[in-house]
Image (cartoon, rainbow, N blue to C red; front, side, top):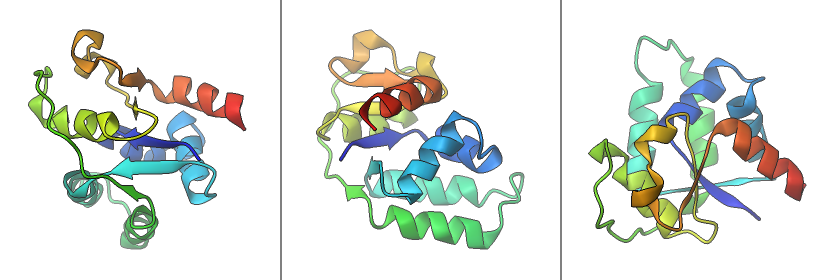
Length: 136
């Protein structure tokens, strides 16, 4: 089964707009037709961002997502040697580089320039939804 890395902005967008591509992708995670690759740093960021007061996400929704996350693909990533425009995004690239499919789904494509990402494929949520549809 496919297992992709979701940038935090995709997880937030999925919860804000469940009918858009990020929301449909997250729905596939809940339906167990797609899996997430993550590490402990990503899990901590997901939790911290989802709990920000500006989003006002219900705690039950956050708890459900984190419970599902615990059943996904926990990766022990390798370090990444090249610098990204936003150094905080390195964890996503490191996890993707250590996963079988080597895919990051992000709403911030410019944060992951091809020259830095090497063999890791960086997809927008719409591109990821299209690719997912090709395999289902």
